[in-house]
Length: 399
Image (cartoon, rainbow, N blue to C red; front, side):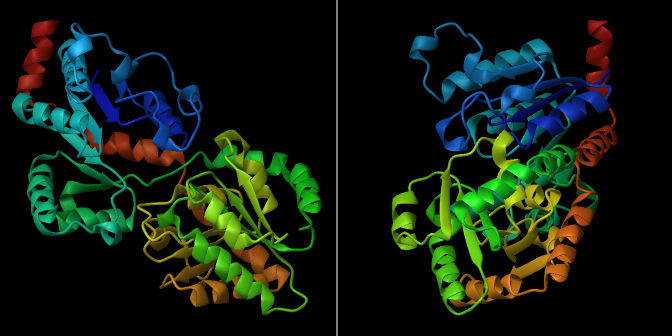
Protein backbone atom coordinates (compact mmCIF):
# COMPACT_ATOMS: atom_id res chain seq x y z
CA UNK A 1 0.00 0.00 0.00
CA UNK A 2 1.45 3.34 -1.05
CA UNK A 3 1.72 5.88 1.77
CA UNK A 4 0.78 9.31 0.44
CA UNK A 5 0.75 12.57 2.35
CA UNK A 6 -1.23 15.42 0.76
CA UNK A 7 -0.60 18.93 2.10
CA UNK A 8 -2.87 21.94 1.61
CA UNK A 9 -3.21 25.26 3.44
CA UNK A 10 -6.74 24.91 4.82
CA UNK A 11 -9.76 22.75 4.00
CA UNK A 12 -11.84 24.31 1.22
CA UNK A 13 -15.47 23.45 0.40
CA UNK A 14 -14.58 23.02 -3.26
CA UNK A 15 -11.60 20.71 -2.63
CA UNK A 16 -12.57 18.49 0.30
CA UNK A 17 -15.07 16.39 -1.74
CA UNK A 18 -12.33 15.68 -4.28
CA UNK A 19 -9.87 14.71 -1.54
CA UNK A 20 -12.40 12.27 -0.13
CA UNK A 21 -12.97 10.91 -3.63
CA UNK A 22 -9.21 10.28 -3.93
CA UNK A 23 -9.38 8.43 -0.63
CA UNK A 24 -12.30 6.35 -1.91
CA UNK A 25 -10.85 5.51 -5.34
CA UNK A 26 -7.23 4.86 -4.41
CA UNK A 27 -5.59 2.00 -2.59
CA UNK A 28 -3.34 4.46 -0.76
CA UNK A 29 -2.87 5.03 2.90
CA UNK A 30 -3.70 8.72 2.44
CA UNK A 31 -2.92 11.30 5.10
CA UNK A 32 -4.61 14.64 4.47
CA UNK A 33 -2.57 17.37 6.15
CA UNK A 34 -3.71 20.98 6.45
CA UNK A 35 -1.61 23.84 7.79
CA UNK A 36 -4.65 25.02 9.75
CA UNK A 37 -8.29 24.11 10.15
CA UNK A 38 -9.47 27.60 9.21
CA UNK A 39 -8.38 31.21 8.90
CA UNK A 40 -10.28 34.44 8.57
CA UNK A 41 -9.16 35.05 4.98
CA UNK A 42 -10.81 31.93 3.55
CA UNK A 43 -14.19 33.59 3.00
CA UNK A 44 -16.25 30.83 4.62
CA UNK A 45 -17.32 30.18 8.19
CA UNK A 46 -15.66 27.82 10.67
CA UNK A 47 -16.74 24.24 10.24
CA UNK A 48 -18.06 24.59 6.68
CA UNK A 49 -15.02 23.36 4.81
CA UNK A 50 -14.04 20.31 6.82
CA UNK A 51 -17.61 19.08 7.29
CA UNK A 52 -17.22 16.46 4.54
CA UNK A 53 -13.80 15.21 5.57
CA UNK A 54 -13.24 11.85 7.20
CA UNK A 55 -11.53 12.12 10.58
CA UNK A 56 -9.42 9.12 9.66
CA UNK A 57 -5.93 10.21 8.62
CA UNK A 58 -6.82 13.92 8.51
CA UNK A 59 -4.57 16.21 10.54
CA UNK A 60 -4.26 19.95 11.12
CA UNK A 61 -0.78 21.22 11.87
CA UNK A 62 -2.02 24.03 14.12
CA UNK A 63 -3.68 21.43 16.38
CA UNK A 64 -0.82 18.93 16.67
CA UNK A 65 0.85 19.16 20.09
CA UNK A 66 4.57 19.88 20.31
CA UNK A 67 6.74 20.40 23.38
CA UNK A 68 7.74 23.96 24.18
CA UNK A 69 4.98 25.44 22.07
CA UNK A 70 4.75 28.61 24.18
CA UNK A 71 8.01 29.93 22.82
CA UNK A 72 7.48 28.77 19.28
CA UNK A 73 6.84 31.42 16.67
CA UNK A 74 4.02 31.21 14.15
CA UNK A 75 6.43 29.99 11.46
CA UNK A 76 8.64 27.65 13.51
CA UNK A 77 5.71 25.92 15.18
CA UNK A 78 4.03 24.47 12.04
CA UNK A 79 7.42 23.45 10.65
CA UNK A 80 8.23 21.40 13.76
CA UNK A 81 4.75 19.92 13.79
CA UNK A 82 5.09 18.91 10.14
CA UNK A 83 8.51 17.36 10.72
CA UNK A 84 7.09 15.35 13.60
CA UNK A 85 4.25 14.13 11.39
CA UNK A 86 6.69 13.11 8.64
CA UNK A 87 8.79 11.20 11.16
CA UNK A 88 5.74 9.25 12.35
CA UNK A 89 4.09 8.64 8.97
CA UNK A 90 7.17 8.08 6.76
CA UNK A 91 5.22 8.72 3.53
CA UNK A 92 6.40 7.21 0.25
CA UNK A 93 4.98 10.03 -1.84
CA UNK A 94 4.03 13.67 -1.29
CA UNK A 95 1.31 15.71 -3.00
CA UNK A 96 1.90 19.39 -2.29
CA UNK A 97 -0.63 22.15 -3.06
CA UNK A 98 1.40 25.34 -3.40
CA UNK A 99 5.08 26.11 -3.07
CA UNK A 100 5.57 29.39 -1.16
CA UNK A 101 4.40 29.05 2.46
CA UNK A 102 6.54 27.61 5.25
CA UNK A 103 4.90 24.14 5.46
CA UNK A 104 5.05 23.72 1.68
CA UNK A 105 8.69 24.80 1.47
CA UNK A 106 9.54 22.50 4.40
CA UNK A 107 7.90 19.54 2.68
CA UNK A 108 9.66 20.27 -0.62
CA UNK A 109 13.05 20.41 1.12
CA UNK A 110 12.25 17.23 3.06
CA UNK A 111 11.44 15.51 -0.25
CA UNK A 112 14.83 16.56 -1.62
CA UNK A 113 16.81 15.43 1.42
CA UNK A 114 14.86 12.20 1.81
CA UNK A 115 14.78 11.53 -1.93
CA UNK A 116 11.03 11.12 -1.90
CA UNK A 117 8.99 11.58 -5.09
CA UNK A 118 6.50 14.42 -5.02
CA UNK A 119 3.80 16.07 -7.08
CA UNK A 120 3.32 19.83 -6.81
CA UNK A 121 0.22 21.64 -7.97
CA UNK A 122 -1.82 24.80 -7.50
CA UNK A 123 -4.02 27.27 -9.33
CA UNK A 124 -1.31 29.59 -10.66
CA UNK A 125 -2.34 31.30 -13.87
CA UNK A 126 0.10 32.50 -16.54
CA UNK A 127 -1.89 35.73 -16.96
CA UNK A 128 -1.80 36.50 -13.22
CA UNK A 129 1.96 35.95 -12.90
CA UNK A 130 3.17 39.49 -12.31
CA UNK A 131 6.30 39.05 -10.20
CA UNK A 132 9.02 41.59 -11.12
CA UNK A 133 12.63 42.39 -10.34
CA UNK A 134 14.37 40.40 -7.61
CA UNK A 135 11.12 38.66 -6.71
CA UNK A 136 10.80 37.44 -10.29
CA UNK A 137 14.38 36.18 -10.30
CA UNK A 138 13.90 34.31 -7.01
CA UNK A 139 10.62 32.84 -8.19
CA UNK A 140 12.19 31.59 -11.40
CA UNK A 141 15.07 30.05 -9.45
CA UNK A 142 12.76 28.34 -6.95
CA UNK A 143 10.22 27.05 -9.49
CA UNK A 144 13.01 25.95 -11.82
CA UNK A 145 14.31 23.77 -9.02
CA UNK A 146 10.83 22.39 -8.37
CA UNK A 147 10.05 21.49 -12.00
CA UNK A 148 13.39 19.71 -12.37
CA UNK A 149 12.78 17.51 -9.34
CA UNK A 150 9.02 16.95 -9.26
CA UNK A 151 7.90 13.46 -10.23
CA UNK A 152 4.85 15.00 -11.87
CA UNK A 153 3.05 18.34 -12.00
CA UNK A 154 -0.74 17.91 -12.23
CA UNK A 155 -2.22 20.90 -14.06
CA UNK A 156 -5.77 22.15 -13.57
CA UNK A 157 -6.32 23.76 -16.98
CA UNK A 158 -4.71 25.42 -20.00
CA UNK A 159 -3.59 28.66 -18.31
CA UNK A 160 -2.11 26.70 -15.40
CA UNK A 161 -0.29 24.41 -17.83
CA UNK A 162 1.17 27.44 -19.62
CA UNK A 163 2.34 28.80 -16.26
CA UNK A 164 4.41 25.68 -15.51
CA UNK A 165 5.78 25.51 -19.05
CA UNK A 166 6.95 29.11 -18.68
CA UNK A 167 9.09 28.03 -15.69
CA UNK A 168 10.83 25.25 -17.55
CA UNK A 169 8.52 22.26 -17.17
CA UNK A 170 8.53 19.85 -20.10
CA UNK A 171 5.28 18.44 -21.51
CA UNK A 172 6.18 14.98 -20.18
CA UNK A 173 6.48 16.45 -16.66
CA UNK A 174 2.81 17.47 -16.72
CA UNK A 175 -0.41 15.60 -16.16
CA UNK A 176 -3.97 16.89 -16.39
CA UNK A 177 -6.17 16.89 -13.28
CA UNK A 178 -8.90 19.45 -14.02
CA UNK A 179 -10.06 21.81 -11.28
CA UNK A 180 -13.54 20.56 -10.48
CA UNK A 181 -16.47 20.71 -8.10
CA UNK A 182 -19.19 18.26 -7.10
CA UNK A 183 -21.34 18.86 -10.18
CA UNK A 184 -24.05 16.37 -9.26
CA UNK A 185 -24.66 17.83 -5.80
CA UNK A 186 -24.78 21.38 -7.15
CA UNK A 187 -27.18 20.48 -9.97
CA UNK A 188 -29.46 18.60 -7.57
CA UNK A 189 -29.36 21.51 -5.12
CA UNK A 190 -30.28 23.99 -7.85
CA UNK A 191 -33.13 21.76 -9.06
CA UNK A 192 -34.51 21.42 -5.52
CA UNK A 193 -34.26 25.19 -5.04
CA UNK A 194 -36.21 26.16 -8.20
CA UNK A 195 -39.51 26.89 -6.48
CA UNK A 196 -37.86 28.78 -3.64
CA UNK A 197 -35.76 30.70 -6.19
CA UNK A 198 -38.89 31.67 -8.12
CA UNK A 199 -40.46 33.05 -4.93
CA UNK A 200 -37.25 34.96 -4.17
CA UNK A 201 -37.23 36.40 -7.70
CA UNK A 202 -40.76 37.66 -7.17
CA UNK A 203 -39.87 39.12 -3.78
CA UNK A 204 -36.94 40.99 -5.34
CA UNK A 205 -39.06 42.22 -8.26
CA UNK A 206 -37.09 40.20 -10.80
CA UNK A 207 -39.71 37.69 -12.01
CA UNK A 208 -39.42 38.77 -15.65
CA UNK A 209 -35.80 39.96 -15.58
CA UNK A 210 -32.64 38.44 -16.95
CA UNK A 211 -30.69 38.04 -13.71
CA UNK A 212 -26.91 38.36 -13.59
CA UNK A 213 -25.05 36.87 -10.63
CA UNK A 214 -21.72 37.64 -9.01
CA UNK A 215 -20.34 35.27 -6.34
CA UNK A 216 -17.16 36.04 -4.41
CA UNK A 217 -15.48 38.30 -1.91
CA UNK A 218 -16.22 41.99 -2.23
CA UNK A 219 -12.62 43.11 -2.70
CA UNK A 220 -10.91 45.39 -5.22
CA UNK A 221 -9.47 42.73 -7.54
CA UNK A 222 -12.95 41.32 -8.21
CA UNK A 223 -13.69 44.53 -10.18
CA UNK A 224 -17.28 44.77 -8.93
CA UNK A 225 -17.37 48.55 -9.10
CA UNK A 226 -16.96 48.26 -12.88
CA UNK A 227 -19.69 45.62 -12.97
CA UNK A 228 -22.16 47.84 -11.11
CA UNK A 229 -21.44 50.85 -13.31
CA UNK A 230 -21.68 48.72 -16.45
CA UNK A 231 -24.96 47.17 -15.30
CA UNK A 232 -26.53 50.57 -14.67
CA UNK A 233 -25.26 51.87 -18.00
CA UNK A 234 -26.54 48.84 -19.92
CA UNK A 235 -29.98 48.87 -18.30
CA UNK A 236 -30.46 52.61 -18.94
CA UNK A 237 -29.94 52.13 -22.67
CA UNK A 238 -32.53 49.40 -23.17
CA UNK A 239 -36.23 50.07 -23.08
CA UNK A 240 -38.54 47.18 -22.34
CA UNK A 241 -35.74 44.81 -21.23
CA UNK A 242 -35.70 43.98 -17.54
CA UNK A 243 -32.37 43.17 -15.86
CA UNK A 244 -31.31 42.29 -12.34
CA UNK A 245 -27.95 41.97 -10.60
CA UNK A 246 -27.43 39.82 -7.50
CA UNK A 247 -24.11 40.16 -5.65
CA UNK A 248 -23.32 37.32 -3.25
CA UNK A 249 -20.49 37.75 -0.76
CA UNK A 250 -18.93 39.93 1.90
CA UNK A 251 -15.81 42.05 2.01
CA UNK A 252 -14.21 45.40 2.64
CA UNK A 253 -15.60 47.01 -0.53
CA UNK A 254 -19.27 46.49 0.31
CA UNK A 255 -19.95 50.06 1.61
CA UNK A 256 -18.45 51.60 -1.54
CA UNK A 257 -20.27 49.15 -3.81
CA UNK A 258 -23.59 49.88 -2.13
CA UNK A 259 -22.92 53.59 -2.61
CA UNK A 260 -22.36 52.95 -6.33
CA UNK A 261 -25.61 50.99 -6.50
CA UNK A 262 -27.30 54.06 -4.96
CA UNK A 263 -30.49 52.32 -4.00
CA UNK A 264 -31.09 50.86 -7.47
CA UNK A 265 -33.92 48.34 -6.80
CA UNK A 266 -32.55 45.97 -9.44
CA UNK A 267 -29.20 45.49 -7.63
CA UNK A 268 -29.28 43.23 -4.59
CA UNK A 269 -26.56 42.39 -2.05
CA UNK A 270 -27.12 39.12 -0.20
CA UNK A 271 -24.17 39.28 2.20
CA UNK A 272 -22.29 36.10 3.02
CA UNK A 273 -23.89 32.84 1.93
CA UNK A 274 -22.84 29.40 3.17
CA UNK A 275 -21.58 27.08 0.40
CA UNK A 276 -24.51 24.73 1.04
CA UNK A 277 -26.96 27.60 0.37
CA UNK A 278 -25.44 28.87 -2.86
CA UNK A 279 -27.61 26.62 -5.03
CA UNK A 280 -30.64 28.86 -4.39
CA UNK A 281 -28.86 31.87 -5.88
CA UNK A 282 -27.61 29.89 -8.86
CA UNK A 283 -31.17 28.62 -9.41
CA UNK A 284 -32.47 32.20 -9.27
CA UNK A 285 -30.03 33.52 -11.88
CA UNK A 286 -29.56 33.30 -15.65
CA UNK A 287 -25.87 34.15 -16.08
CA UNK A 288 -22.74 34.38 -13.94
CA UNK A 289 -20.44 37.40 -14.34
CA UNK A 290 -16.75 37.11 -13.40
CA UNK A 291 -14.57 40.03 -14.47
CA UNK A 292 -11.83 39.89 -11.81
CA UNK A 293 -8.56 41.55 -12.69
CA UNK A 294 -6.68 38.65 -11.08
CA UNK A 295 -8.46 35.28 -10.98
CA UNK A 296 -6.14 32.23 -10.88
CA UNK A 297 -9.05 29.90 -11.67
CA UNK A 298 -12.56 30.90 -10.56
CA UNK A 299 -14.41 27.80 -9.36
CA UNK A 300 -17.65 29.78 -9.31
CA UNK A 301 -17.57 29.26 -13.09
CA UNK A 302 -17.67 25.49 -12.57
CA UNK A 303 -20.44 25.84 -9.99
CA UNK A 304 -22.56 28.12 -12.15
CA UNK A 305 -22.17 25.85 -15.18
CA UNK A 306 -23.17 22.81 -13.14
CA UNK A 307 -26.32 24.72 -12.16
CA UNK A 308 -27.08 25.64 -15.78
CA UNK A 309 -26.03 29.29 -16.09
CA UNK A 310 -24.56 31.11 -19.06
CA UNK A 311 -21.14 32.64 -18.33
CA UNK A 312 -19.68 36.10 -18.88
CA UNK A 313 -15.98 35.98 -17.97
CA UNK A 314 -12.71 37.71 -18.75
CA UNK A 315 -10.26 35.87 -21.00
CA UNK A 316 -7.56 35.91 -18.29
CA UNK A 317 -9.71 34.18 -15.71
CA UNK A 318 -8.03 30.78 -15.30
CA UNK A 319 -11.18 28.82 -16.09
CA UNK A 320 -12.11 30.72 -19.24
CA UNK A 321 -9.83 29.06 -21.85
CA UNK A 322 -11.15 25.64 -20.87
CA UNK A 323 -14.80 26.30 -20.09
CA UNK A 324 -16.16 29.46 -21.73
CA UNK A 325 -16.75 30.45 -25.35
CA UNK A 326 -19.57 31.83 -27.48
CA UNK A 327 -21.49 28.56 -27.18
CA UNK A 328 -22.18 29.06 -23.50
CA UNK A 329 -21.44 32.73 -22.88
CA UNK A 330 -19.25 35.71 -23.68
CA UNK A 331 -15.50 36.11 -23.23
CA UNK A 332 -14.29 39.64 -22.44
CA UNK A 333 -10.92 40.86 -23.70
CA UNK A 334 -10.73 43.98 -21.51
CA UNK A 335 -11.86 45.31 -18.15
CA UNK A 336 -13.52 48.52 -19.28
CA UNK A 337 -17.03 49.55 -18.32
CA UNK A 338 -18.13 49.92 -21.94
CA UNK A 339 -17.16 46.37 -22.96
CA UNK A 340 -18.80 44.88 -19.87
CA UNK A 341 -21.98 46.90 -20.47
CA UNK A 342 -22.16 45.74 -24.08
CA UNK A 343 -21.75 42.11 -23.02
CA UNK A 344 -24.55 42.49 -20.46
CA UNK A 345 -26.77 44.01 -23.14
CA UNK A 346 -26.04 41.17 -25.54
CA UNK A 347 -26.97 38.50 -23.04
CA UNK A 348 -30.04 40.37 -21.79
CA UNK A 349 -31.46 40.79 -25.29
CA UNK A 350 -30.90 37.26 -26.54
CA UNK A 351 -33.99 35.35 -27.61
CA UNK A 352 -35.04 33.13 -24.66
CA UNK A 353 -34.36 29.98 -26.70
CA UNK A 354 -30.76 31.08 -27.39
CA UNK A 355 -30.14 31.86 -23.71
CA UNK A 356 -31.48 28.42 -22.77
CA UNK A 357 -29.15 26.83 -25.32
CA UNK A 358 -26.19 28.57 -23.70
CA UNK A 359 -27.28 27.38 -20.27
CA UNK A 360 -27.72 23.81 -21.48
CA UNK A 361 -24.32 23.93 -23.17
CA UNK A 362 -22.76 24.98 -19.85
CA UNK A 363 -24.13 21.90 -18.14
CA UNK A 364 -23.06 19.62 -20.97
CA UNK A 365 -19.52 20.98 -21.02
CA UNK A 366 -18.93 20.85 -17.27
CA UNK A 367 -20.13 17.25 -17.07
CA UNK A 368 -16.60 16.07 -17.94
CA UNK A 369 -15.12 18.20 -15.15
CA UNK A 370 -16.39 16.31 -12.10
CA UNK A 371 -14.56 15.37 -8.91
CA UNK A 372 -14.60 11.68 -9.89
CA UNK A 373 -12.59 12.36 -13.06
CA UNK A 374 -10.22 14.73 -11.24
CA UNK A 375 -9.55 12.24 -8.45
CA UNK A 376 -8.90 9.47 -10.99
CA UNK A 377 -6.50 11.72 -12.93
CA UNK A 378 -4.58 12.66 -9.79
CA UNK A 379 -4.30 9.02 -8.73
CA UNK A 380 -3.06 8.04 -12.18
CA UNK A 381 -0.46 10.84 -12.15
CA UNK A 382 0.91 9.75 -8.79
CA UNK A 383 0.92 6.05 -9.59
CA UNK A 384 2.89 6.47 -12.80
CA UNK A 385 5.87 7.18 -10.51
CA UNK A 386 7.50 3.94 -9.28
CA UNK A 387 8.59 3.55 -5.68
CA UNK A 388 12.22 4.64 -5.38
CA UNK A 389 14.58 1.85 -4.25
CA UNK A 390 15.32 3.49 -0.89
CA UNK A 391 11.60 3.73 -0.12
CA UNK A 392 11.08 0.07 -0.93
CA UNK A 393 14.05 -0.83 1.31
CA UNK A 394 12.59 1.32 4.09
CA UNK A 395 9.30 -0.54 3.74
CA UNK A 396 11.01 -3.97 3.94
CA UNK A 397 12.86 -2.84 7.05
CA UNK A 398 9.62 -1.71 8.70
CA UNK A 399 7.95 -5.02 7.87
